Amino acid sequence: MKAIHTLIAGAVLLALAAPLASAQDAPKKKLYCWNEGGRKVCGDALPANAVDSARTEISAKSGLATAQVDRALTAEERVAAEQAARDARSAALKAEALKRRDHAMAESYATEEDLRKSFQERIVLLDETVKASQLGIEGRRQTVLALLRKAGEAELSSKPVGSGLSENIRGQHDELLHQQDVLKQQLLERSLADEDLATALDRYNALKAKRSGG
Image 1: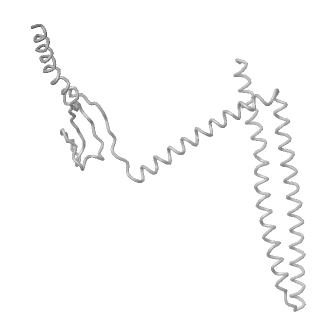
Image 2 (image 1 turned 90 degrees about the horizontal axis):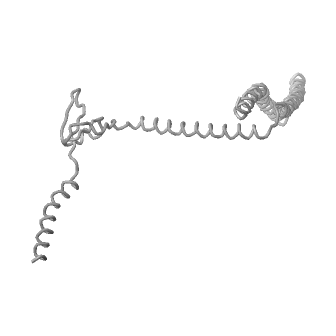
Image 3 (image 1 turned 60 degrees about the vertical axis):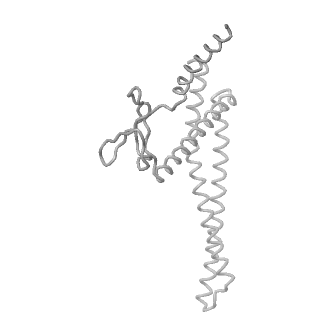
């Protein structure tokens, strides 16, 4: 008899639990509100033409907004967003690299004077490089002038300017222009060296002050 009562009680519990489980498993109903043609539209289903629109999702049970979905990006906006994400990652990597460089700088130089000496070595090397380029350019210019003078003398003597001489002039002139471009870059690097030193000193002193608690 007791067993029969137990079976009946179990069946009742199962019967009561089944609707509860179904209610819990059933998806929660939502309402959607979006703008269409300048007016607000709401419904319990989202039509295909509104899938990419900005919308508010509302719980049908509580009437409260549960989510705010932005409109889908256009192809141009997606490209811009991807570029912005790449720029942000690049900026983060640069910031991390600067942080590591600052740490290495603080560890490498015991004093400010040591840092100055390190930069001074770079500045001296840049000065020597610029000087060598200037001498090379002057020598190349003299070569071009000599070749042009030779060609001019041939023309004045009513003699043809050989193809070999013409090609040599063009080749020497092109190399002269290349060396001048290289010198411009070297001069720019030299002009920035003093600024780099000033920036490095500021960072170095700030790091040392931070470490000493000052």
